[in-house]
Image 1 (tube, rainbow, N blue to C red):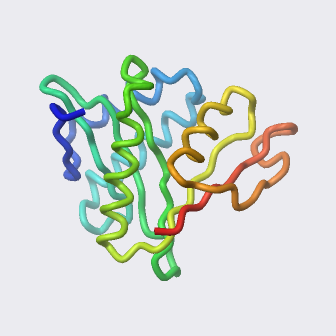
Image 2 (spheres, one colour; image 1 turned 180 degrees about the vertical axis):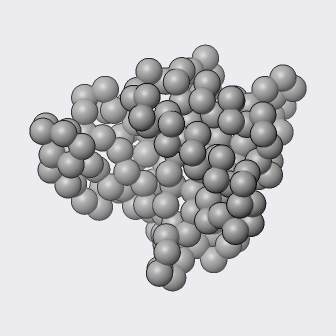
Length: 160
């Protein structure tokens, strides 16, 4: 991960990169891919007026992973981690842990005290649950049948 460049400033070319990375996982529906793109488009359009923040990891050719996060409105130091996504070909190489740690450091520097994230309870997300737990996140809540019957929302939290 030493040869990667990290940047927070979003660029127009990031829209395609985000779409490609999120699609490469095979986990997300077309609607979810569109949401990921919409967040990036809002940031591009509104710049600093947008509450969304990004951290991109790129090699010499392309974006290979990113996070999207933001302060939860009407809170004091609580942040949502909306997206963490790594190019499918680079999963398991430590990039996810590096990217989440760098994102946590940015949030901490912004005055963040807690980070919340959510995911599905579907079986295919078991590795995702393990990843979050290995990064120090703990299950805070389970909202039964949130997404669909038999697909609950799991909310994780980490105190910084």
